[in-house]
Image (cartoon, rainbow, N blue to C red; front, side, top):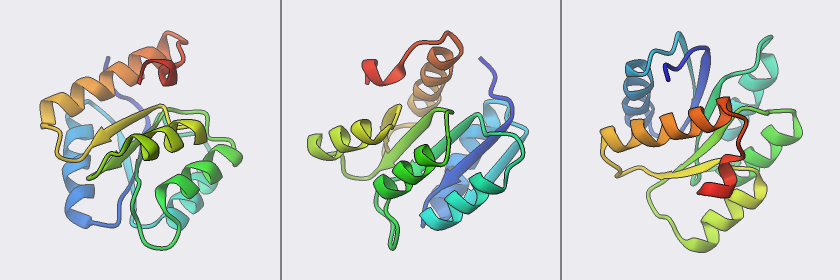
Length: 136
């Protein structure tokens, strides 16, 4: 599946946002919106006239962390898939993210090709109307 529409990439590290932007662009997206903080992500989301097709959200950020940002985005009506990103994946943190509404969880050290496969899986499941959270 080709990725179309807007994607919000949220990470406090510019080089990670750039890396993820390149991956998402390779999947065919038209517009990538970057946010360095959770608060910026919520503001970008709420300013959109059309919802994004995907949000990629870092777990560990200063200020509003990824889990808090995830909860706020879901509260504000984000229905699109939200994929959490982290350098450290503990079972407790993954379960917390899933409980807060995350659709998938990807470690930042995952090879590029595998990130693409995982994103395609999430988007395909969303397109087919399946609950991705049951499969992560």
